[in-house]
Length: 120
Image 1: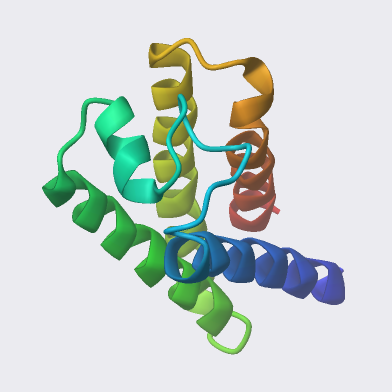
Image 2: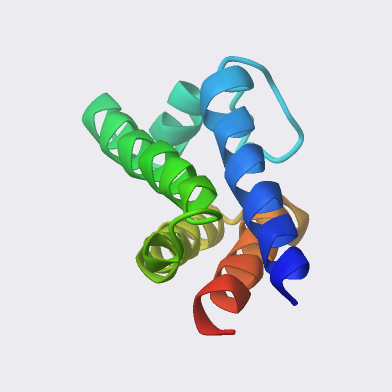
């Protein structure tokens, strides 16, 4: 079970870091509306650049903390829980702008994985 938990942390942590640090200026089929970048996606949601930086700070920080929790288990619960809250917000934003359901899939998948990490 320990290796399964580590695998989940690696999947979630590295995937979110990829989205926010590497793919942030690249188009993907998962972006809200017709946005091509994260900045455009936040504009589509009606959120300003400050919110982009606040959300980004927490997602990157909690992703790093989740990865650190592989060694320091006491970090696991809170980092996974904060990420779960942020991912719930992502799903709500997709619903708010009437995105097709498939665009919420990554956020929903990572939400479930974060809840498994936090609660199991």
